[in-house]
Structure formats: C-alpha cells, structure tokens
Length: 397
Image (cartoon, rainbow, N blue to C red; front, side, top):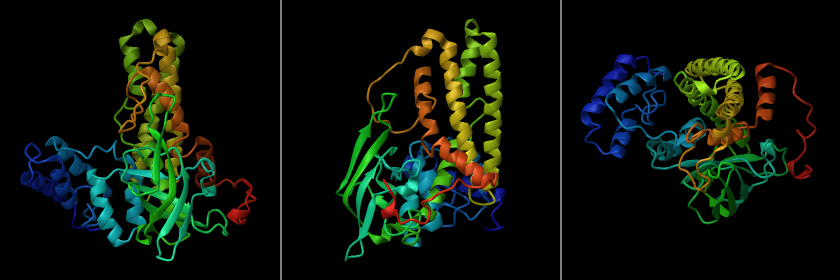
C-alpha cells in the first residue's frame, strides 16, 4: 500500500478524470473505462488493475466527488456477482494474465458473471459436489454436471465454477476452481420459476464443456480454499451492503406506518419499534464490518451479518403484510420474467414477503451459517463428522 496516496491525491485524480472526461458529454462506457484506468474503480486494488494501492477507506473520497459531478456508475446491482465474488477471488488467486483479462470488463459491466457452485445434491453440503472436471491429453478440462440456483446465468458471459477433479480424495480436497465461458458449447441454461413468479434463478447443465487450464484459479485440488474467499465475500456483499437509515426492508414498512394511521394497533406498534431498532443495529454493524475490511480480507463475521439480514427481512416483510391486512394479500403481477437484477425491496408488499423467503437459502443457508458462526467466531467445538477422511467416491449418496 502506497503511503503517497492520501485523500488529497485521490481527490486530485478524480477531478482530473472529470475534467478529461466530462460525464455530461462522455459515453458511459468510455467514462467507466477511463475511471478504471485512472485507478478509481477500486482504489485499494493494485495500480493497473483499477486501483492505486491506496487504503480502502479512500474509496468514499472518489465516490463522493463522482456523485457530486453526476458521473455514471457501473450498475452494481446488475453485476453484483462479478464485483462482490469473482473480482476478489481473481485478485487473490488469479495469474497476472487473468487479472488483466477479466477485471476491467467485469468492473465496467461489459461482462456479467454468475456463480456455478450449488448442485441438486450439494447445496448445504457444497463440498459434496459431483460435477466432474477431467483433464484430457491437450491439458484442457472437460466438465460434466449440473448446477442450480444460479442467479444471472441467463445474462452471464463468465462463471466462477468449482468441480471435482479427484474423486479418490476426501470431498474437500479433490475440488478445483475454474472460470467457465457461458457461451461455450455444452452450456445449457434453463430458467427456474420462483414463488414470486419470476425466474431470477436458473439451473445450468454442463455437457462436455471444454475449459482451458489457463482458466483455472489456484492449484489443482485447492479449489475449496479458493471457494472460501468467494463465499466470505458473497456473504459480506449480501448482508453487509451500505444502506442509509431506514434503507432496505424496514423503509417501506415505516413509510406505511407514518402514512396510514388507521392501520396501527398497539401490537404492531411494539413489533415495528423492535424491528426498527434491530434493523438499525444491523446497519451499524455492517458499517463496522466494512471498516474492518480496510485492514484485510473478510472473515466469518460476514456470516453473522448474512444471518441477521435473512431473519430481519423475513420478519419485517411478514409484519408489513399483516399491517396491510387484506391489501397485503394482493399481488400485482405473476408474469414470468427473467430479471436483469435482484431487487429485494422492489414492487409491493406481497413480492417483498415472498422474495424474502429466499434470503435464508441464497448465499449459504441460515443453518450452515449458524455452524460457521459457532465454530469460527465463537470457537465452539465442531459437530462430529465421519466423512472428513473418506474418499468422495466412497461416500453414500
């Protein structure tokens, strides 16, 4: 980290960017590419990879200057998997060539990413995954298997993928991590319609998909270690995103309470106050977690934030439906669409209530996250496991 880069330097570089590429007259993609090249995408990333080797805390200096100038952003909700999961994993484990190839179009939003981790038989127990990657005589990997619950697969150009490369090893040790081109032959994406009516998720079938060894992240067989970086960042990005006071799920409920006094009861008053306080505590805890990230990589604390996020969203949306009484049972639109981004709080109360049911599943189930918090945060003994040293091929399935 360069001591020469301080807030004044970041501010100077941002103003130079704005002067050379006025947002009002510069093409959006051209501006974002120039911002990346100026090191103002992720200021804490290395020089040449969208950053300045500066403290992470200085990102808000650049962001404030850019917001004041009405500069375009890179639509982070649309490319959240790339920004929150793929990018830190590529930075941590990718080769120099991989970093140069993937990080710039990822950040600019020219290439959307998805995550090929969960499988029909390996959701909560992800390490039990069965998708196989076999190396052929050319050195490439041939991948066969099925993935599920894949957000944005219908939009994605690239995917982060974990597959089993050695079935003779225990399940955690025979996995490797790859970058998969979603446009390659053998990749089939099918929509999964959800309780909301939308098909935000997908299932992905991989049949003889050829992945060059140059698209492997980390050593062969070390994919579980690489995946932990992805998963920790995923939980932070889901549960620890920056929001204003009364942002997120609590906002619409508080608004309804203020504007519709005829709906109020003493019971819902008390419950709303309790949930408002809990939501504010979670918001401030997320801010503290982001400050901790300045000093290093995300830890298991992100799992605690993700747990709180899921529980609060479900309780708050449930209260909203109850508060609205008959109106809460209405649902505006069941049309099957494949959205470009996930909106937890958009649309109406019925949508928020139904969509929140997925919050305790996506990004790691609440049950799995409770184990992570117990073992890695609280230091409690782990549950007995009789499959840790058994070859994956010998496990009962």
